Amino acid sequence: MLKRIAWGLLALLLVGTVAFYAVGGRTGVALLSVKYIMHQDYAPTREVAWQAGPATAPSAPRRAPNVVLIVADDLGINDITHFGGGIAGGKVPTPHIDSIAKGGVDFRNGYSGNATCAPSRAAMMTGRYATRFGFEFTPTPKQFMKVVTSMAPAEQLIKPIYHPEREAQLIPYEDMGLPTSEITLAKLLQGANYHTVHLGKWHLGDSPQFRSYNHGFNESLSHLHGASMFLPTKDPKVVNAMQAFDPIDQFLWAAEPWGVRFMDGEPFQPPKYMTDYLTDEAVKVVEANKNRPFFMYLAYNAPHTPLQATREDYDALSFIPDHTLRVYAAMIRSLDRNIGRVLQSLKDQGLDDNTLVIFTSDNGGAHYIGLDGLNSPYRGWKATFFEGGIHVPFFMRWPGQIPAGTHYTAPVSHFDIFATAAAVGGQKPPADRPIDGVNLLPFIQGKAPGRPHDVLFWRTDQYLTVRAGDWKLQVSELPKKEWLFNLATDPTEKLNLAGKEPERLAAMKAQLTAWNSTQRKPLWPSLGAGPIAIDHSLKQPTKAGDEYIYYSN
Image (cartoon, rainbow, N blue to C red; front, side):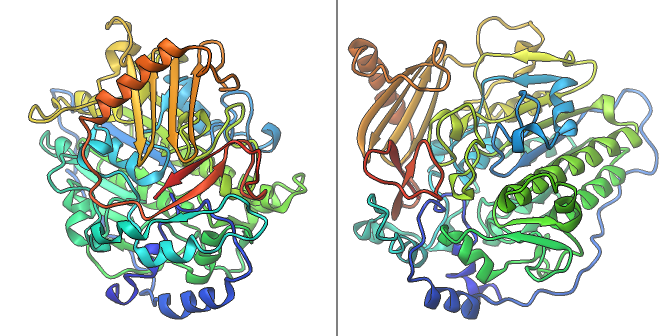
């Protein structure tokens, strides 16, 4: 069944890194083809039989701490109220997400592993720059890229680019996955007798050898491919907000992917709104594992497109006049409530004090939503290395080990999750390869001097960025431009100092060159690149005079 849709659904659901193109008027035939080619019948809803741990808790010594990693999808740093803002002017509070920061540490300079989903998640799972092992681009077949890059409307003066000369180096779509030679956090914790469970988004390969259950997870309840509906479009309990200016959004509505897979079983329909469903199952996982150490990776697809809210959440926000904003805000409301349910389940099972809870987003808010301000006060979006694309909510809570209300200001990265969780589980990172992440606990607790990282890097194709101390340099080939900012005095990247600091510029470019020489060539090439305006959403076409970058997929 999946082979039948390998070129279609597999491509079109991977909306993370290519959803920056504007829609023209030539979509009708394409969308009809999507509906015809990609239709998939999912099996009826079924119960997931989670493996039960021991019937009683161990006596002395105290069991190892649990690790719960919760990752939102495309959550903007201004979507939550912890930082004093929040979606819809702060009128939609996020008390449960905020409580993780208030009860533990808020990394005020927490950075994503990359500006888009798949490589960022690869960094979390491995503790390494994804470019170290070639996982640089989101898996996408060439047929999809050809279609999407041809859809820019006439009013978009800066057009997407397709690279036909790179087709010869393309590998089969099914082979685009996290290399099996990589040691994931799940695999490492399995070595310490942790029971490891993945729920939700994976996005690191869909062929069986690349799925999460073959990367160290004992159990996996996974979305198919890279995205999912939250409910079928015509369900009476859902309210939809469709973005006519975003071709990927149009493809999603046409394909209407609505299925999950438990381990390697047949895909089936969830019984309810996806965020609620994943939480129901996460609560069951906590209960099933209350008497043994476990690692749970709960990867929500909210608030990623398609924008769909439950009618109940939508109706609760009647004070928001804009329909799209109201649906998006309702998704944030649902996400926060469900994270609260997971936190409550830990308390109900007596596990709260013995669990490290980590919360973050895979990258910043997306410009293809069509809503400005998701990453305020920062400039930029998902798929850019401006702060709006990579400066993400990043919190950890572990009662008794992390002092409540800690604000940690030194830069940290997603790949630090690996070393930190490994240390909690009593494991050391693999010694046979470079590990870029570090255990953050000694720094939080004041036991380690200095910063965890003096320098952080990012790369996608010909777009590279380095943060060295408080200085940040972005170097782009499309357009050919350099942006140099002093984040200590200009955290929102308004004043480009590249022309005023030639010596610093040269030194930081040398740092980029040296680091880049240690990274691996991509496992597959980028076939397309799209222009992303730094200062406005996709709802406004990119035009002459805009500051923009091309982001490659």
